[in-house]
Length: 179
Image (cartoon, rainbow, N blue to C red; front, side, top):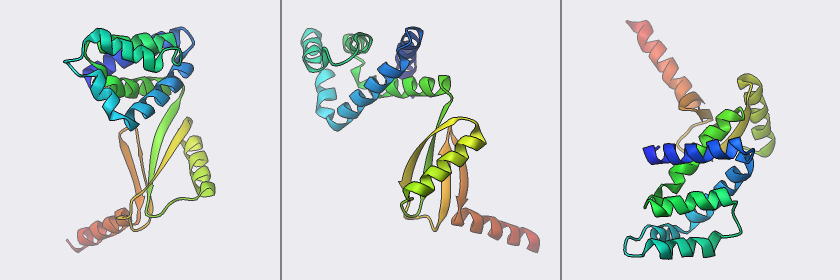
């Protein structure tokens, strides 16, 4: 996370929260960054130093004007004005972090060797919500290097229930017992 992302994303979140628009603006910010992620040329265009700021602001207005909340449009204009448009993704990351914190949401990524079916992922999500006492946004990823089991990553922590971790634990216990 960059300092600019923290400062700008945090400022946008605080404004949106104060106005009761944190969910609306958050959803629009997510969609916006998804579209920008699919079109990196647009981000390059908005950060091209040889293109005048007035022209970049005009392009921004033509592209998103009337489609995004005024607060989000003004925010994007500030990024263009300050030559920090490339930080839009870091700003969204900070916005999302603060939103989740304010709404008691934790994001969890579950890694498995094979794709987890819908019923199993729903049960995992339910169990995590009960255990953590928070709403869980679960992201599923496959990791073919895993032998089996589940590895969870959330808020900088890793809970490793994979077969490899269990085997490593057994190996450590056996080597420790020989000494």
